[in-house]
Length: 185
Image (cartoon, rainbow, N blue to C red; front, top):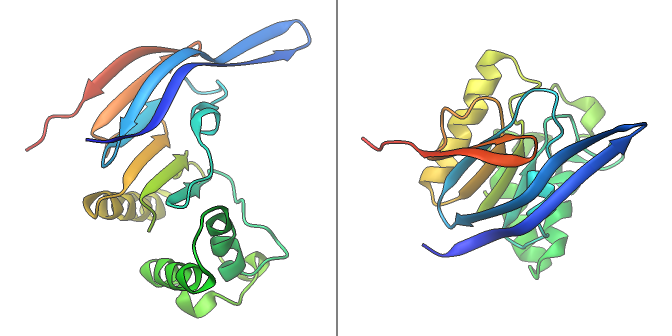
């Protein structure tokens, strides 16, 4: 499989007062097209793995733990904004946004603003995607991610719940301490 994300000696540390935290310490990692990778670390440790290695790409999408929609943009504009980083035409962006919104039953809400809401990329980076969801909505989101993966999407998520991933990577003090590949049925 083709490598689409590569981290080479990536380090990130945070200094606050007299303490220093290593979020990443010399990480070496490759993610290949079509993989579903879960990255976990102990609760409370900062996670910068995705952002450290991610560059805007025309086939990338992002899911954040916290509500990250821009309040003065419509749902359509929020979904369309990452697509401006690629070389897609306006017509291609419109088609992609409409398809994505329909896929999650939000097509009819494209002109709404985030304050008016209740709460399919090739590469999807997900930062604790179920962290702020109840179990039912979390399960729906995880099923949607699995559906996207079955459709060929590469998924890399930072999570405490790696149940759906093919490959699981565990970090501790910024270093990879365990890698495992799920058995396929």
